[in-house]
Image (cartoon, rainbow, N blue to C red; front, side, top):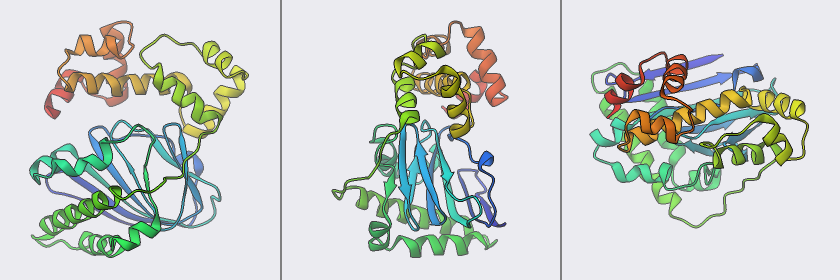
Length: 278
């Protein structure tokens, strides 16, 4: 394993380049970044990219993006093949401080799990590989100008991706049985649902469904539902709802249950954590 890490002084940017020659599938489970926007530059590997219910074939020099509420992961087909990538996570504050809120559109003007991939051909046409190389070189630097240069490079990267997103292209994605289940859960996330209800809906054994779900996402179905309800409650609160109303609209049966689940998931008081984001 080889890695280059970068953390901006103001903590609005996290980035790393990483090369692994041996992988463990259990390490790559579905996850999201609260109030963060991820750019994954896939350099080499043999994998598929799952985001919510969608599955994409991801190829060298493709770029995958995910907004904060999208659960996503890389699913490796061949664990013993090398995996190389650059991952950049931008905090909400990055866009405010750079005065480039319009560049968030590539992340948020999509349905969950839709149009997450910029194919390699388009990435190369936009000269993005050179920008990514420049960012990687800057990550090795520790000068007083490093943060400024990386911010400029990232703004340029977002502009290139925004231009590429405006071109008409069909993004290849598909759904398997697991994807259909995830899509269904998200469509009914604030409603009461049991494992039996979901299994009956898809004419599948409950035990097989639970085993498949945990194997492919790293979550039990119940834990996934809780995580998605917490994400929804966050969004509702940040849109102006009270925490009590947000938690109830997200599907929790009581505020105390929401509070307990929130602290267990994030290790923080929900009001203090979310108020600091506002």
